Image (cartoon, rainbow over the protein chains, first blue to last red):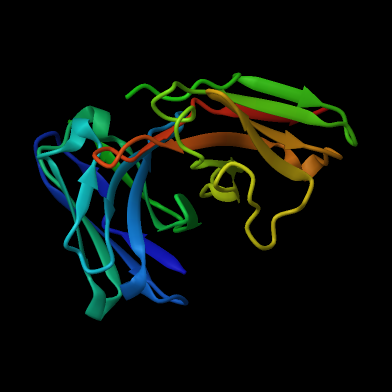
Length: 115
Length: 111
């Protein structure tokens, strides 16, 4: 199971930290991913992190503003969102990355950026 | 990196077969056999249906099959059922720097 939290209604320019707690699989051995989906739109891959957290990858448009991290002792994945913009409004999903796909998804947490 | 191109909608009657295309480029689908397909019902998270072009995860019906030719991947749903009505998205690996891109999405309607 993957359970996200931390979303909410925020004003442009502020920061937010999303969390995802994992259970039922070996979190510390898994690549993990954040994917977002704007209202009425398709999914957009955001970032990946390797099992020990030493490698991270981001979509070009979010590099420098978003940071993915993890705490394997807490079975937790995080996404730090900085300088939020209207275009960042979306449901943010965490997912397990396996065999070049995303095989296990959380229910998502909604981030709404609006003044 | 632009999104992969899918038809906006595809429809079929119960029992029929439908095919959803996913058009990429020589930099993604044309190079890598890392195409996956996701089913998404309204208000739900996406569900993996196909990975590595044609492999089905455990628990996914064998009515779902995937293939690839050149820069185009395809998802075929055979024996269409009412529960198959959903949005479907393809995804492909691109490169080690920005690994993944999703498709524009296809709404499947069961008539």
